[in-house]
Length: 62
Image: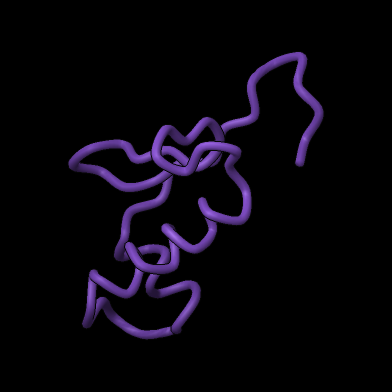
């Protein structure tokens, strides 16, 4: 699980200035990775905490 702040810092190398940027990029990733981006299986939101990438047991990694 990564917080928005951690993702922003790792990707842009700076302190969180625009939380909206992280949400926009998460949306773009979901559109590419998920069959149904509105109901994500892999790139999940952990409300109030951040995001996590999940591969369920028995599934092939994407």
